Length: 366
Image (cartoon, rainbow, N blue to C red; front, side):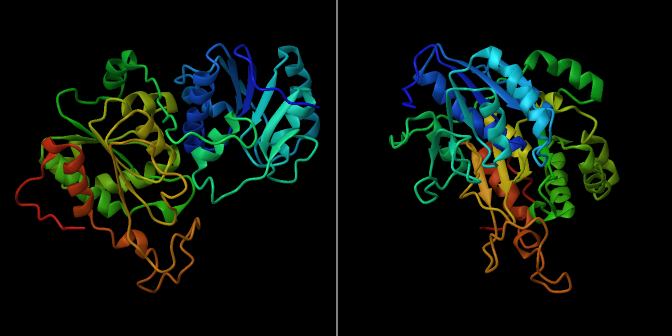
């Protein structure tokens, strides 16, 4: 069949990614589609957990829950969803994941134009299939955005950045619900990483940053999932007892929508390479990001107010969930263990000048 360029009234189904950070970066594609085709209708089929993120993307008409996991084939369930979606009469599907499974529902839905990268040999399931040139598109956001253009068309140099619209009217109630102060500046710490421990800066380092900012008159909010509760508790336990009342463990206590809206009022954020880091960047918060096993050369925070910190090591970036080196050696987790808290505090000062550290705190140059 001959694939036509999209019309202004195009109705598009996006098959969304399965990670928080990837979903945030996908907003760049949604913005780009709306810029090109202002009257287009965009729906996103994605895991149910992503609804709070999608709800803060004004480009999207609605989120459709994907009831099957990204690792499950569940042929009959995908066929059922696809058949139900035929009633929507979408003009195009854009499939962001590279798996064969992710292309099944648009095929079952008989969407005329089904666009995506070749991925897992998806000939037939996709009829607007693109070979991926990783050198041409080194960033994930570029790979998403290129699918907004006809095959072979040049990607724009100035790509839109994600721009989540937080619900700030909820913040006073959230502060009251979680017992958060309203007078002190807020440093949000995101010490977890769903990917694995090779992306997590040590708790002791986070505690040192927290202690310094509390000494500067700030409060600290620790954000993350329920899996991050022990890490957050460990950070608080490492603080002087007098400081602990100004450090709040919200990991696993807040829902994702709460974390988004609270991050929107943070004066600064320190994070590992994680989904919450991408959310903070999309909320245009000043963010200091500590990289370990991964690289900003693939999924950087898309924000001008960012400081990216890392330690060059011979073995990195390895993109492993756990450090593959012998735990008994000094090389184990070197990329994270040797990055001092002083560098993060110095980076915070660069991003938020009135967050100058106490003169007794010795800064270490990069």
